[in-house]
Length: 197
Image 1 (cartoon, rainbow, N blue to C red):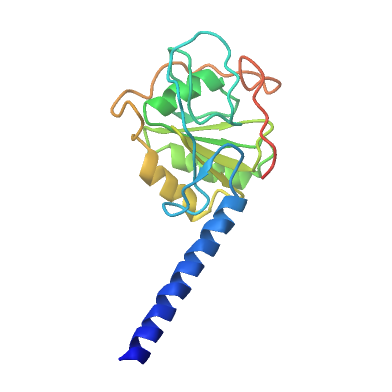
Image 2 (cartoon, helix red, strand yellow):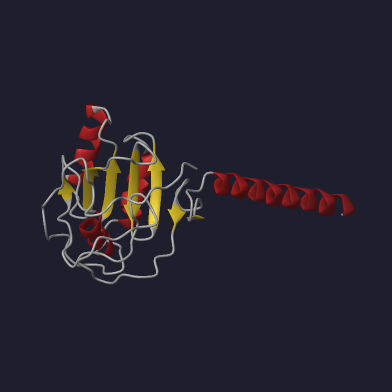
């Protein structure tokens, strides 16, 4: 009986040490200012979003691209865009439950085509290019973010399934402006920089 308890105890200790090691690895890959939430989707980061106030001013967001915060009173209409959209309008869409998929302007055309396919069947997916991204593709929802290397990463589908139509104002329309901005300025102000992890 003692040997059974010893073996069982050893297994439990080994599992606990493995979990601690895995959490340490997740922390190392966390974008600045975020909290790892890898138990949901590997690489998923959660941010505290203290404000959802409306403003017509440019906002200096702590993430690049933003994952929530003060925003323009008019949301960005969800869908696929070939030009950047204003941060402040896209953040309003996040509040309504949009998943905003941003991609580097030099992303290969076949990857962009995959992202476009994700936007077409979903009323709560917004896709747009975004200069200066910290990864080739960044998926954002209200208070959530996932950095990706490829559009065919299965975690992107998981992210959409979890967060599309699931923001602080669920059921609110993902419709408003369809305006875009020149590539030289992806926002009304200057996007906040995030150092690489």
